[in-house]
Each structure stands twice: as C-alpha cells, then as structure tokens.
Length: 362
Length: 97
Ligand SMILES: [Fe+2]
Ligand SMILES: [Fe+2]
Image (cartoon, rainbow over all chains, first blue to last red):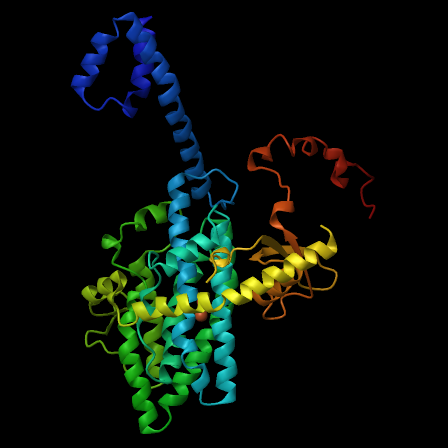
C-alpha cells in the first residue's frame, strides 16, 4: 500500500515538494492513516487538476509548434490570452492615436491631391484601429474597456506618436519611415499564431503599402525641390529616424515579454532582427533620394551583409514611454475631447435605433 | 458627457463580405452599431474601403450558434467513415472517361 502511494507521490511531487526536509516530513506523516487519506485527496484534486492543465499546455504548445492557428474558442493558457490582449490592445491604440499627428496637417495639405490622399490614409488608420479592437474583443474583452484604459492614460501605444509634426515634410517622412517600420513589423505578425490577429494583419499590410508609397513620394518630391524644401525634408528625417528605430522596442535582452511571445509564435522575429531588417531596407531608399540618415556610425558591414548602426538613446525611449514625451499629454487630451464631442452623435444614433426598433416590432 | 453614453459600445455585429458575383459571403470581422442600418454603414467603412465588397451581410453576434472546438471529434465523426460518398470509392472499367 505504502509503496503504491509513494509511487504516486514521486510522480507528482515536482508540483509541490520543494525541498528534502519537506519530503522527509511527509514521509514520516504518511505512516499516519488520517494524513494518508487527506494527502491522497489533496493529490487527486489539486495536483490532478494541475496535471490536467499541464497536459493541455503541452498539447497547446504542440499545436503552436506544428504551425496550427489558434481560434477564439480554442483552449489557451491564461497567460497567452493576457499577453495577446495587452499586445493587440496596444497595437489598436497605436493605430487610433496614430491618426492625430497626420490629421494635424489635413487642412494645410499643399494640393487637393495631397489632401485627398492624406484623408484616405488617416481614415485607413481608423479602420486599422477598428480591425484590431474587433480582433481583441474575440479574447473576451470589451472595446469600451480598452478605450477607457486609453483615455485614462493607463494603456500604452507606440511611442512614435508622441512626437510632434512640425512641417509638411513630416507627412512624407511618417509615411516612409513610420509606416515603413510598421510594415516590417506587421508582415511578420501576419503569420502570428492567433487567427483573428493574423487575419487583421493581412488586411492591414495590404493597405500599409499605399501609406508608405505616398509618403516616399512626398519625400522624393521635396528632396528634388527647392533648397528650402530639401532642407525641410532633411530636417524631418533627422527628427524621425531615431524614433522610428525605437518603434521596434527594446533590445531582445531587455525585452521582458519577447521570449514567451516567441515561444507561442505570437511574435516570430525578435525586436533586434526586425530593426536590422528595417535599417537594411531604408538606407538604400534614403540614398536614392539624396538624403542622409543622422547616424555617424551607419556603415555597411560586408561580412554581415547588413548595415551597422549606432546605439539608440534608450533614456529618451523610456522617458517617452513613461509619458514624458513631447506630445503624450496632448494626444490623450485630443482623444478625450474627440470622444466627448462625439457623445451627442452616439446619443442621437441610439435614440434613432430605439425608435425604429419599436416600428419594426422586434 | 452623459453617463449613459460614457462608452461607445453598442451591440456587436458580425460582418460577411461577398467580394465577387457568384462567390460566397465570407466572414470579415465585426463592428459595433446601434441598429442594422448603421451596422451596414460601419461595415462598409471598415471592411470595404477599396471595393472589397459587392454585397454585405451583418448579423447580430449573439444570434450566431457555433460548434465548439471540443466538437471537432464526435460532432463531425459521422461523415468520416462514409467513403462511399466519394466518387473515388467506385471501380469502373479502365480507359473509360
Ligand atoms: Fe495602420
Ligand atoms: Fe499606416
């Protein structure tokens, strides 16, 4: 009897017996009948449940490893769900807040063509926000809660949008560098293990290419324009280059969530890999239009067949994330005002819906 | 801002998009809207800014009944042992087209 018992314990002890002394005590106590009984119940209920979870977890990891896509109703570890909500929520907020720096220039676009393009781009970003809020809701959160977190300043969004847009050239440089960096990030996320997220990403990637191209067109036009125009666009590149590199997040070794997200194939490439890819893509594009990038350490590395580049100012990065960037307060204020100013529209829509519901008798 | 409208939640609608004549309506995502008309308008603005749709359906999310992942075995099993439902099951003289 005792031997059978100890076998059970040995099988399961990794869950709760942490040291030798505890093991000895339990060994002695097992000679007492009532303890035996309680202990057995404990093993079956608590440890049994844990083992069940372990089994599910390893089955989940097997699905991920074999490239299966996880859908909303599938079993998933709580941690996977939480990480996705955090990451997708931040992503949705970034699209949403990302409208602001560009909307700032719609009324001052230099031609009707540029104005129409900019309007369409900003509207796309609203759409991206909505795809992503909708995808995040499949994980069992409400959009209103996510929005509330944003408006109360509790949620994070991409730090790039906390920099001001000071000249028209910024509209070009944002499309080229910021949307360009987003494309590098999102092309990989399109293969992420969570179905609704990856489908939203596929849709978004298709639209981002227009964003990048219209931006690069503005940059190219200004770069071959008057000396003032060229100076304006170079100044804009100088301001946005480093913040664009920061968009990929901290170094891999400083990134607390990366390893877990990669194990679950939510992320498939690390921050540093993606940043490098972006640099390698962008340097030739800058040269093609005769602009320089503000990094004296930028140099082609023949061995790596990649561009070496200087160190990011991480103090600035963390400072902006903490809410001390040039535009953090402004952005949240603008979002709050927009939400509040829209209250009467929502009220009217609700009143209209209520009236017609009575007429339709449903 | 009135308390009632503090959120912009509204009911959730699932959006189905038909992208070409004769094709099926395929699930695209969801939108929030107070009524069916606005759900359609929102669905158009969110999921068809580039002529992705020639027809749209919106369905209140709560009206959808779906199988559970755990059904995958038992629920769909009955079909898997009926190979005689496929033409490959049958032997016909060789050379016949
Ligand atoms: Fe976007
Ligand atoms: Fe974009």
